[in-house]
Length: 88
Image (cartoon, rainbow, N blue to C red; front, side):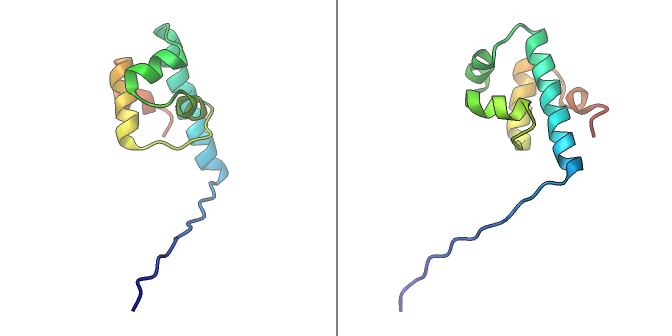
């Protein structure tokens, strides 16, 4: 017999609350980045994350893993809890 390959497609549609949350987190990241005088390119270099990804993140158009969020907060020298305060 042959082994079949399957592609699983998961449709993920975000509701308004999810979109609002991502936009708020992204805005907070942008504020903290700018407060430290960093460009997107500089933050991308520090975090080893793609500049385009960070731009989409800051505008709320991209979700992020906890590990990448931790990486960003470490490089911005802020606590994860402070970043998410009043956003959750």
